[in-house]
Length: 319
Image 1 (spheres, rainbow, N blue to C red):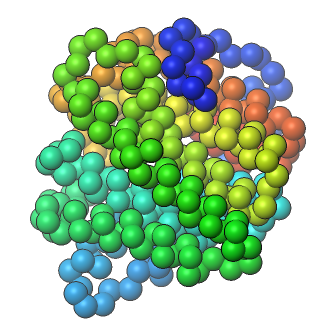
Image 2 (cartoon, rainbow, N blue to C red; image 1 turned 30 degrees about the vertical axis):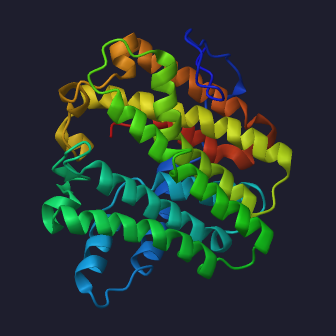
Image 3 (cartoon, rainbow, N blue to C red; image 1 turned 180 degrees about the vertical axis):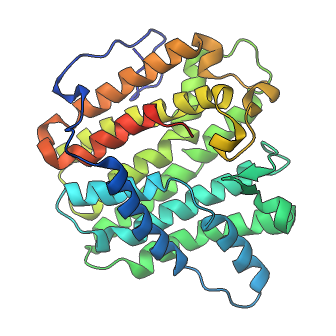
C-alpha cells in the first residue's frame, strides 16, 4: 500500500474494513464546518489592519480573505479540542496556518511557477496587484504568521508554543512545502517519474502543512507523545489522500467547481496519480488512505468524530 509515513511504497493499498468505515450519522459535518469556518473567517478578518503603505496590506487581505474551505485551521481547532484544549488557545495558530497556506497559493500562481489567472473564483493576486506586490504579499503573510502565533496565543506554556512555531517553520521550509515545490518544478515534463518521487513531492508540498495543522493543535494542549503519534499517522494519510483527489479533480471537475483553471496539470505536463494509476484506481487508493487515517483515531471514540468526518470529506469533495 502507499505508506503515508514513508511515502515510498509502490503497491496498491487495500483498506481494512472496520467500525471506522462510516462516521456516526448523527454528526453533522456540514454544520460543524460552517460554524468553524465562520469563526476562522472572523478571526482572519480582524488579523490584518490596512495601514500605510496600504497597497501591501490590501494585497495580503485580498488573498487571505478570498474564501476557501479553511481546512487547515479547522483541523488545528479540531485536534486542540480533541486533546482537551480550547478554540481560543488554538485560533492564533489556526490563523497562522491559513496565512502560510495563502502565501503558498499566491506564490504558486505566479508566472514563474504554475502561472494561473484564477484562485477561489477570483483573479489571482498578481493579476490584480502585479507580480512584484504579489511576491511581497506572500512574504508579508509568511513572516506575519509567526509573529501572530507568538504575540496572540494565550494560555499555552512557552515551551509548547516554541514547539508549534518550530513545527510551522519545518513544514514550510525546504524540509517541507518549499522542498516539495522544487522537486515538482524540476519534474515537469518528466515522462518516467517514479511513484516514490511523486509521493515525495506531495508529502512535502501538500502533506507537510496539513500534518502541521493537525499536530500543532494537539501540541498546544500538551497532548502526550502517543497521542501525537496517532494524530501524525492520521495527518499523513489524509494529506496524501487530499493530493490524490486534487489530481483527480484537476481532470474531472470544471472551473466553476474548482474556482481555478481546470486541466493545469496536463497542460504543464506534470506527473499525477491518475497519470500513473488512472482515475478509478486513484480514487481507490485515496479511499484506502482515508480508512487508514480513521483507524488511527479509533481509540478516541466519539471525540474524534469531526476528524473522521473530515477524512471522509476529503475523498467525497468536488473542489
